[in-house]
Image 1 (tube, rainbow, N blue to C red):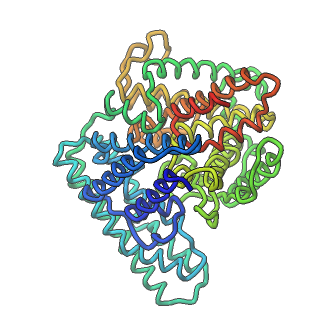
Image 2: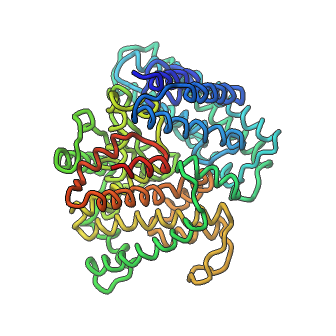
Image 3: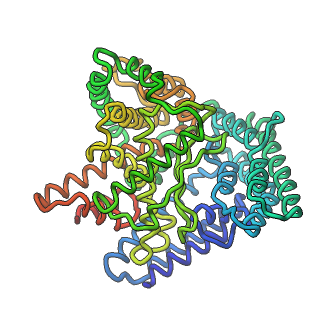
Length: 557
């Protein structure tokens, strides 16, 4: 173990102590009975830790390439987080990504097998009001400092928090935990009583927080949705780990959308000759032979697809270690974004990687668009990349394995993985290939509307969609509905998410662009000696990082 690796491990331990909710997310044990302090004082303590760690890294000796890469990756993340803190981003309320959401999601990741596990859940439930109150202090401090949050984000946070808290007499998310305890048949009436009390307390705290947002916070919110160039440029660096030419990226997003739409039309001709994209999509959505009915049946289909894909890819196109061959397909609790997501395994792999599918109340699932999404979230997408990083304990620092990387690296790989499965012959059914193209189109749309809305750019004069007009949320919403080919309810939640997390939405296509360019350059350098399987192994074994560092390191392969 080198000095830099020791510093990295120390940092993870100290972050876990300061931020127990993140500790659960990382799979670091020992903090599941605690909640995070989300107050300004706690943010200052985390900032002090980052600055101290950066100073230690700067003074540490570097021993070989592994050390160099580990230090650069860690310095990039910590430095950018400090810049974002200095810009006051912590005071902005995001509709989908806020402290209340993060706390709620942590319960999904907590072990539930033993009485001790449930005792941790009970203890954390009792502390939820404390965590909510600390976040309210952060928001109040933001109001005093004149920080601006968009009304659209506040409205979404109210809706989400009410759902989790069981407003209107419906069961709260926390009530479902008690039901899960009952299903485990653990003989402890006292613990059940504690869980019921904790669930009621947590639900009440969420409802009270929603009332606070509605009655005290909303009036101070602003109509403007975009964050402006300066904060967007910084936020896009945080999410991508590279300084982007935003105008060039915006133009490229349009070019990509036009290219993808042309390929979509060609693919539609193979499914329903003479039909438009919209007509083909309607056919695929309505054909009963191309859908699965029932939530449980769909979850099992997702599980079977993941298991089969792992079995077929392992030792052929990828080196997949045994611990990575376990993944669980889950149905997400209601209340959050409608985008499917992935949560990684715990540090010791006792908790497996999981894909989470929000049904949005659906019970019927057309399959044409689901296959490539499964590849994105599972294997060879997020599960393979995220779990590989955690598995490489002998090669990567603890920070790289548990906290490293950027959305550009992570989401870029997952989008690359969708396209890769087409290259490997797994999307030969035109339905599924069209689904992959739809996902690509939606990510190109994200580049256009995310940059366009936040920077309030003009729509190019040569476009058919509102040429020359300036982007706003309403134009972005309608454009997404027309050009993403995804359902309206999904895209409505997506646009709110883009506006609440500036720079993240572009990371999929921006990251994929970097992965594809790096692979093409390596092919050119190596010629006939190039092996895709070996390139994937070498690339992922470098560990997660920002896109600028990734470009430098992959240029060596």
